[in-house]
Image (spheres, rainbow, N blue to C red):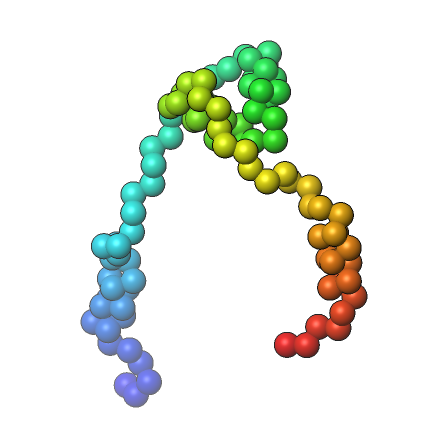
Length: 93
């Protein structure tokens, strides 16, 4: 039959696509901790603008060591003005 694929070709294509790649890294294993609503609220308050999981991880591993300062999450006024100007420019791709 012309135009039909043999079952060997289909099976080979399927098996090659389902093999795991050797360069894939294993995912980190999660640790589950349950907090009361009050404890969670306190953690969120202490975390501030930092991601809650990052805050808990940092405190669990490093204790009271202060973390380094990071850039604020709100852009500087000049960056806002620049964003508005760039937004109004015609886009040429």
